[in-house]
Amino acid sequence: MSAGLILLCVAIYTLVLFGVTFLTSRGASNETYFIGNRSSRWYLVAYGMVGASLSGVTFMSVPGDVDAKQFAYFQMVLGYFVGYLVIAFVLLPLYYKLNLTSIYSYLQKRFGNHSYKTGAFFFIISRIVGASFRMFIVINVLQQFVFSHWGIPFWATTLIFVILILLYTFEGGVKTIVWTDTLQTTFMLTSLVMSIILISKLFGFHFTDVVQTISQSPMSKIFNWDWHSPVFFPKAFLGGMFITIAMTGLDQEMMQKNISCKTLKDAQKNMMSFSAIIIFVNLIFLSLGVLLFNFAHQHGITVQHSDDLFPTIALNYLGPVCGIFFIIGLISAAYPSADGALTALTASFCIDFLGFNSSENTWDEKKKKRTRYLVHISFAILLLLVIVIFKAINDESVLRKLFTVASYTYGPLLGLFAFGIITKRQTKEIFVPIIALISPVICFVLSTYSVDWFAGYKFGNELLIINGMITFAGLLLISKKQSLS
Image (cartoon, rainbow, N blue to C red):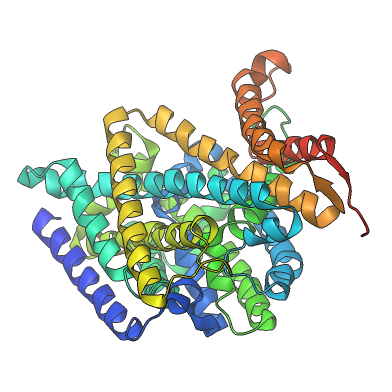
């Protein structure tokens, strides 16, 4: 597939996004930007969240890991479902009851400013690193297959994408993203299904042949009962559950779409519908992985990194039609990784650190809007710089460690919210940031030396739970019974 054709697909897709942006951002206010005037349709939010959840990492890494880890990832997906139940029936009622715009303002109401700022700070760090990593994965593929052919440097490619994302999220915010996520989910799922259909045709498979090939493959094994393994079922299931609670339910980017629904009931319908769809979609991604590896083994295709398998086969072996669908799907995975993050980062900083919603803030609507524009641009520049730094590192193992460290930072959020909801104790506020900083450091050390210290045991996603428990225990040590007065 030629570089020019790939670029044409990207350009047409981007123009469609800008068309949607123009229609949804007219007359937008700060309230529109932050929570979409609480008028989002729940079914659009549910459908669009599929695209927002399935980043470029999922698009390439989930099929790419099938050969090494089989369908073990599906154990986590089953845990996701339980996590979504907790979000729908514990966290969302809390957010709606308090009428929150930033979910971290709950921490202010429950504890005080130190906890509030700590929660918002950890979200910002997590989202900057996480969104940058997800964008890097996708931009790196496009650089390799398109822009490098024309001598365009990586930083310039990144700049182009950041500017495009900046422009179409600049005005409409959440209202725009609800609609663009819907569009992007449609293209991503279409790309996924078409990739399976086209590769099946090359094998001469009918639907029953595809099902039989996948079900009989040793790669389709789901459950792992080796307690030494990072994908041991209880670890994977509980890890998936708490990852969902922390990285969706305690994440401003994901929750601002949910709280943009008209009512709590609508938001709950959105969450439960989304949770059912996401299980099915992840199963299709894993199934695609089996077909890709079978195709690679049959044709003697080798790749340096497993993440490269899908793009290599789609762009070099399956013809231009599959290549077009792959590029559209990849771009559909890339844009939601950054547009929602950019909007959520801007919203969190404006509300949590600049006090847009505070009664003490006397700024008029125009000044708030100018400030929001400036913050929006600043975070776009920051994302650009972090992505370029990732490229300079140029070490996949280091990059994945950075991404893992970013996930550690949700542990303090998990501990803070759990402590606030479960107990009635009040913290000594000045010590909260210290507890929140120590917890992920302890977890990183545990993860690094667990094999030596714990008879070969490797931590997996359960480290997030331990992180939250350490934070919870620390908060318990610096707390006292809440006064009844």
